[in-house]
Amino acid sequence: MKERQKKFGKAIVVLTVGMALCAVFLGGCTEQGTTTITIKGSSTVLPIAERCAEEFNAAHNDIKVTVAGGGSGLGIKSVANGEADIGDASREVKQSEIEQYGDIFVDHKIALDGVAVIVSKAIYDAGVTDITLDQIKGIYDGSISNWQELGGPDEEIFVNEREEGSGTRDTFMDIVDLDETAADKANSANSQVKQAVSGSDVAIGYVGLGYVSDETPALKIDGVYPSAATIEDESYPISRSLHMYTNGEPTDAVEEFLNFVMGSEGQAIVEEEGFISIL
Image (cartoon, rainbow, N blue to C red; front, side, top):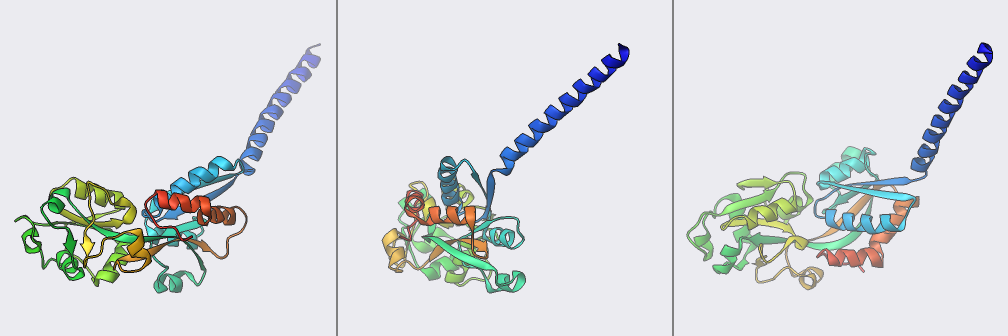
């Protein structure tokens, strides 16, 4: 009798363990049945990528898109190293990156954008609404340091820029013809530049077009205001395209997501986020 009880007890233990393992394996099957797409990179592209991922995920039970920022340089590096399926960038891949990682990048242009030069509302209201490229260069190289030199109040200019690795910074520095700056603060994202400018009465900074607001008005540059029309006709001097890069031609779920971004639904999101559609 005791022997039968021991055998019965062992059988219960085996059954219990088996059921637990089954549950684990079934759960794993559920996870394994979901394809994850990882996106990293540009803070400018971030709001587009997040909104597109949200809409795409809601329509797909078998695909999950995750999005993170970190800058264009990180996005390109992450794609090259296999840490991301898609690298967001607010600039084109550099020749130095191709030399470092190989000619592996496939470009998917998803939007057009301009780099807007924004100022504190108090400065704009004081009459500084237009600026030249030469004056922008002077502010950022330190040769212009007071708003009075631009027709504004007798106040020192608080200069904001982006950190190295930012595609927005690369575009700005290239077009304004700067190698280095005398900026007071380097910010890691467009949103931080916007916050720094809106929180000051004497600040200037540069951001993607989608970050312009009533609290951080954009200046005309050489008489041209940044808008969809002036960026499309290239009359606004600081313009660019936005990109999603892959390591080689995309396939399966990644290709499906990119088709969504570049299709009518994704491009509607591009416009809703303040950028310019490629369609």
